[in-house]
Length: 104
Image (cartoon, rainbow, N blue to C red; front, top):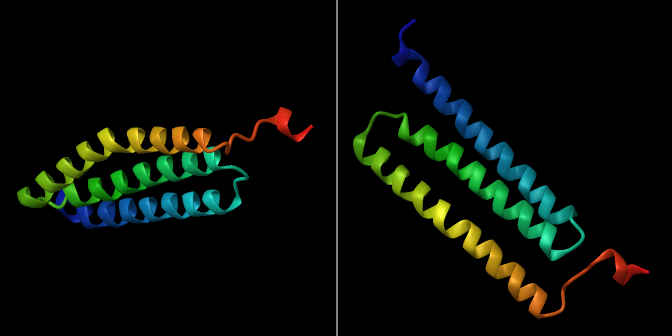
């Protein structure tokens, strides 16, 4: 079997992996107790899930799609940590800090 025959199967597997990771992230957002763990679940799962889907797009062989996927991945690498940090900073400023000492 040639490599070209495996590309659609690998692409489908990567899309399913990305959807699974993002679905787990949604469950994490719903189940986590405070804003910090919720934003951690959201930022990690979205980044890993979208990157998996972008790799699936990039292996399609179309140069235009691959270039767009690389650009989107680079922007996610730059913006996801900054957005998560700003959300955490805003939550801390608003008093959303929920430490174990607060529950005693």
